[in-house]
Amino acid sequence: MSSNSRFGEQTIVNSFNLFVDTERANICGDQSATGDDAIIHFEGSSIVANDGELIKLTLTNFEMYNNTYNVDVNNDRFTITHSLNATPTTFSSADFRITDKNYATLGEMAIELAKVITRRVNAISTSILNFTITINHLFANTTSTTAGETESYTFSTSANSIANVPQFPNTNNAVSLSMSETCNRLLDIKIVCKDGAATPATLAHGINTFNIQSYASKGDFANLFGGLRQDDNASTSFQSLKTTFFAVSAVNCGIRIQGFFPMQRTTDPYVYLRCNLSQSGGLESATLASDTIRGSSGNSDLTSSNILAKLKRDVEFISYDNATGNEYFINLQQRKLSTIKLYLTDSKNRPLGRRSDTDTGNRGTCAGLQVDGTLLFENQNQSTLGNLFYTAVLRVDIIKMSEVKKLETAPLPLPLPARKAQVGVVSFQSYGLAKSGD
Image (tube, rainbow, N blue to C red):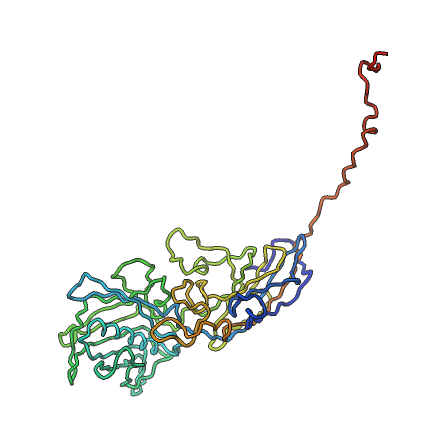
């Protein structure tokens, strides 16, 4: 947004800094405030603009420890829809999720996804007791310098429970490629099902269809693995990731999952600082306003914005320092500022690491120790008693944008007394003769 006013001149008549620290926002201020959703009451220090003036808020500094995860409840979930050969028209669907955390490499993310999918295949067909999982493109073997080689795992459910094993045994000791190395970054997982013999042989999986679906209403999983977003249609045949079956030694025992596009480690590289105050002229893309917008026809491209700043996530910090003085600002519509709410969201206007709905129950924590097998955190107080808070400096300017000229005329005179107001008026009728007729 341009900082130039449509008025001829702008003059700053008053300016001062507002220092914000939200660590104990609910103790020192409003009890409903949190570390990432602060409510500031000015009380006796209200800011007032006179006629022809406006209030301008400019973010000059922001600092916050990045105590969030790149993979969280807003991008970790996907749906597997399958049918079996015995009942090819009967579909079964269930939601699954990869572990919420930061992943250093794409290879580690692919391993995590392979674990979840393999567990599901094992649950569908209990006769399968061994698996061989091969991941292509994302690894470089220690015996070769060629990038994009495979990483293979062999897992026996007879020796361990696939639902509880922390990670698959690494048989090749392959090194996961970093983002800067030569690699096409495409997901390619092959799962081969085997029986429980001493020397496992390939075993038909008995699956007719197996589709991985990433619903837009459940988050941004598709973006992580280079898949297609499913905009809430109920199709059981939609494939967010390409899934095909293959045979080994004439046995239909293999499942292959491929991404259509390159993988990425995060879906939200920015944090958005928003303000509850109405501003003059602020606009944003409709997709930034809500996660319920699916891009269907009839939606407006732009909507009024409450975004004050767009802040870059780094490894350890989320920080910003004003360079020119006018990058991030809002011109307020109101002339009196007595309360302001400053809160943090992701690019879909969702709380950091939490969903905008209430299906998880996590309203105050975005990252941390989770209850085993659930989406819930052990403690819900990261934003009140924990380390989810920020400090910021805002410059408040009172700007004179126009010279208000008022109409100045002489006031209307007071009405005359009745005795003076009657001067020159005939009081008696009949041409001045007395009413008595004398």
